[in-house]
Amino acid sequence: MTRRIVDLRLTREEGGLWLLTLAVFTLVVFVTWRYIGTFVLGLFLYYVTRPVYARINRRVPSRTVAVTLALVTVAIPVLLLVVWTLVVAVRGLRDLLGTDLTAEPIPGIDTVPEFGDVVAIVETTLEGLLTDPVGVLTGALGQSLIGVFETLSGSLAIVVNAGLHLFIGLIVLFFLLRDDYRIAAWGRATFIREGSVFESFLQAVDRDLTQVYFGNILNAILTGALGAVTYSVLNLFAPEAVRIPEPALFGLLTGVGSLVPVIGIKIVWIPLALILLADALITDPSALWFVVVFAIVSVVVVDTLPDQVLRPYVSGRSLHVGAVMLAYTIGPLLFGWYGVFLGPLLLVVVVECARYVVPSLVGGEPPGDEDQPDDSGAFASDDSETASPDDDVSSPRKPGVDDDTDGSVASD
Image (tube, rainbow, N blue to C red):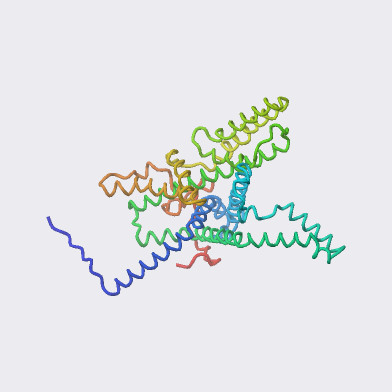
């Protein structure tokens, strides 16, 4: 038996290049970790937007124009929906628990005046300036305006910082959508061997992230928004005895409940219906009609409609439901708000590493590609180009010659 001797000696130039590469890699890791929430948000938006972008790019020859259309039609509305969901959830939870728990307002949320208050102040100020401009500046209205400006300036730094992070997330999304195939091509040419275990691992991670981000989380956000709007509208017609406490908050909780396997959003609306039923029986039996309407609307609109309309378009390959729920629960507890996106990402990496990488290291047999659904992500095989326009693929077509016309793809 002959021994294989590997020469690990490096020349001075090779050693310098390795040191340079290590320094650059350390810098990238440091910057990414400092803005990990922003990058994970951009990655979530990428997987949410990619299926729509793929369909647009089949009809629009320019990749840059297709990415812009996808951002305007999908990414930015979803991002605004996420921000609105967080603001409503924080305000609703604060109002439900009572503002006496803390005297300090939440910067950027509680310190921002309501839209109606701003409109009223503007109208009053304009009327005062037309009739008595000096009195406006020296009277009570002037003091009120000074207080409003102080409040806005106190929240300006937080709002600007949040806006900057959202802008960075959109930049990450833009370049991932436009140049994901170039990143994959660089990886294949550099260190990913065709047919290797590492390639199969990356393809599996890509598939699972599509299911987790585009499937579960997007479905939860849309279901929560639908529930918040539905319950807020219902509360406009509710008798005083059976008004829904914080309807927007409980509507958003239906989105969280949609992540629970088997039970789904019933974990939210059934206890709430029982509470309303008890209130009606104790205080005003004539209001029982609203409890019945609430239950019917919850079943038809909030429960059945997302399952029949949304889930067929956003559901996909499934991970173990218990592990996914654990990631959704532990992620925010460990990392904060972005743990909702980072927790599932870590789960996917760990699961697919156990399925593909570990068996190859210990002499086992990784799962074959025939056991997996067709993959058409950034690391998909070139055969995905032959998919028909009606196929539900999640990545754009391969770049063509026409892509050079808008400068988005460098000439080879």
